[in-house]
Length: 140
Image 1: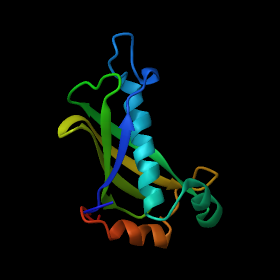
Image 2: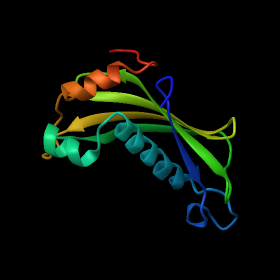
Image 3: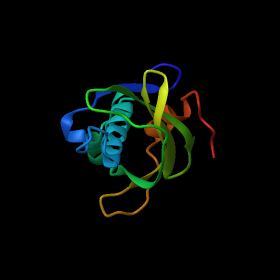
Image 4: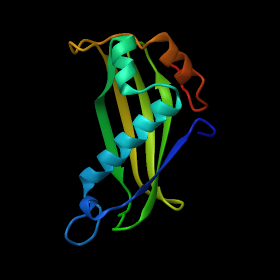
């Protein structure tokens, strides 16, 4: 991760495309999920340990996607992920899917931290601290 941005390379496989070889819109959700998961891992957290040690996990509360262009079979993409805001029980991430320098899709993702019973919980102190250290932060 550099400058607060995590970059995950993703190759477009046949399973990601429609009959015309264009990436089907739901594939971008999978790409973005992988980007968020690897972002957390680079920050020192994974979903399993968050649940076991912190008593909760992140879920997507809200997501907005802007499709700017199309990706195709065998394209090499990069999913860029960064934290842009942190609140008591939530965080907001921006994600961009790119092919070279071309923006393919942009995602604005609001994450909530929930207990196993589905109730909101404050972000664990160590997670909050790491998120607050990110370069693009706009604290709420």
